[in-house]
Length: 267
Image 1 (spheres, rainbow, N blue to C red):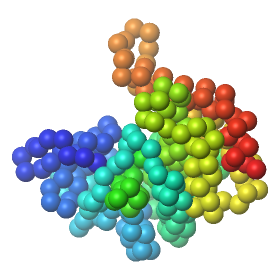
Image 2: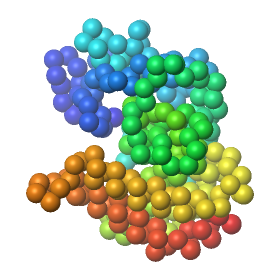
Image 3: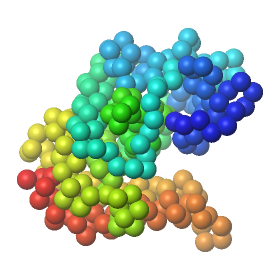
């Protein structure tokens, strides 16, 4: 997250999604939600397991106003620019260690997870972050060091988490964004996907069909964006249309370059 403005003695942070996120000193505050208690329990568990890339829960986890209280993770997001190749295996390794640490988490009987379309894909068998775009990855000297914004965390198929992370961090986007951001060729970006999967330790046999899974995820992501933004013919929705458009164009790019991507990622 980056600083944008101040409210009283708190700095408002950009990148909080649909809720206000502020910082005072080393403490980050976010408006509480029905899933906050469950996510905080997960974060406590990750700290106990030694997973250092997640924020720590401060005190009870809530302030007097019911806001979440988490530790601030130093670093900066490289978004919207590309990662260096060396960062992709680190992201994959981070997700592997997250899934391993979360495997021993005892899900509370009253657990509430934020609704997310990705949980309907595949077989949700691990607890993941579920929002691993570069905007939620803090970096120091362009090396990933932490994951922020855990509000979507919850059950997920590990391949779905990897498909999301690969799509968003190898920047498998259409030519307009590629030209604007100076991205590499489809083959170069496919190699970055392979680097991320190598970092995770995903066996070659399990990579068959991975490109198809990414396409499915991107299409469903675009559809979900339309649903969440409540887009309808009678409403002005320039921001929503832009959000849906880049996702839809990304899906088209993946389809057009599918053979080249499969040649690198699945062979």
